[in-house]
Image 1 (tube, rainbow over the protein chains, first blue to last red):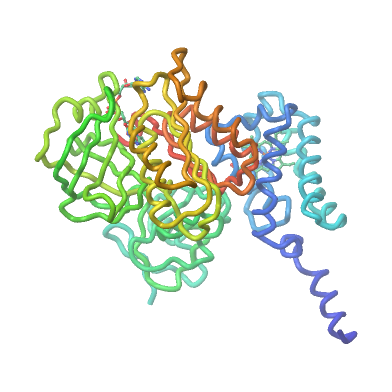
Image 2: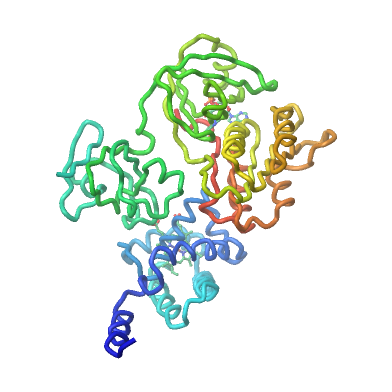
Length: 135
Length: 324
Ligand SMILES: Cc1cc2nc3c(=O)[nH]c(=O)nc-3n(C[C@H](O)[C@H](O)[C@H](O)COP(=O)(O)OP(=O)(O)OC[C@H]3O[C@@H](n4cnc5c(N)ncnc54)[C@H](O)[C@@H]3O)c2cc1C
Ligand code: HEM
């Protein structure tokens, strides 16, 4: 590769969104089963996910991961508040939030995502803490 | 010029507009949530024209084959006629060709549709007692192999439609049906993938169709059926299923009894518990779950936790009083 080409590749990779660098929808699809399985198996938090419809819940997990991966979405802080208000009433707190963060990181590690990209996704998810916990 | 037809109205999407935005601008209310192609709330079906592949992201293969798409991310490249999934079909009359009890509670209904309908075994139709009273019944027959559309209807105490089918419906009578609908069916293409099928009660209806469909299409991977009931009298088609196990070495049938009285040759316990005990690692399996809603709910979760991918779990919960 010529220097010009590699500069171009470097520039491109720097400026592509996190979502694209992770691999877009394919990456979300690969992650959603792994992530949701971890969540459902985790006694600390699975009661929040005891939805009537596991398949619908899985679609929501996909929305969560798309968001954390910096993908296309129109969620606002208010949406995050509304989506989790019922859970906050049911006792959702920092410990549960931390557990979800843990599973997000572990899921990406399992998929061999480089550490710096994991950190970027974690930062996006972390930025919603106040809204998710309704503070 | 590209147009979108919905019901009797026609719309023209703007250059950047999605089908959802276009219909909303025209005053049509379409359910939606994330508006970014993730949550599938705005699922629609193209009844004419092909939706772009990009608008089918994340959908199950069976939904893709049925030209379903997500309205919020659909930027059509040709004119489309669209409908909400449940509105996509008209009603057609059908003649009752045969009524046969398969056990004390389950009636096999064979129908001949006046306008032949194209269906996949495992989908369901809505059968109407009168225009305002219809119920969903799954299809147990296989086109080509069976002459008629076959249903298994379980009698529910005071069931308005199931009771009428059992007590009043007669051979030769004409009923109205709508459909088919549903995405619980066999999609060809991976003939060696192992299949797990779990059903309770009349939940065997779609599974019986799916199994024979798969076998007739040359599915070569293991096909394992667990059919459950509280007592032996609740099982049915046992002879036919045992015959299939003799005919096809890759097919296996386990009748399960959850009550106390366990006859010889039956597994003890609920069908989903027995199945998950025998096949504890479902990574790479395709799973079909039909029948009692509580069983379907538990089994979906258990199958997923046992390694099945969510997209490979096809489920129909026989929710009573839903398709009224
Ligand atoms: C996708 C789908 C596919 C279906 N496929 C089939 C099928 O292949 N075969 C089939 O038989 N049914 C199937 N059903 C169920 C079917 O659509 C009807 O709901 C069912 O036949 C009852 O209708 P009904 O009019 O007879 O009873 P309704 O008049 O609607 O109600 C009957 C009464 O029974 C009560 N009841 C509910 N569940 C039970 C129960 N388990 N035991 C005793 N009483 C109960 C209700 O509370 C109600 O009072 C399917 C449902 C769905 C959603
Ligand atoms: C880490 C930051 C989080 C983000 C970015 C996030 C994001 C989301 C999103 C986008 C949705 C879908 C909303 C919708 O369209 O309906 C959602 C729903 C949901 N989230 Fe979160 N979430 C976070 C943390 C949590 C935590 C900590 C829990 C519980 C332990 C949780 C439990 C749920 C549940 C149960 C739903 C479904 C709500 C419902 O069905 O009503 N989330 N979340």
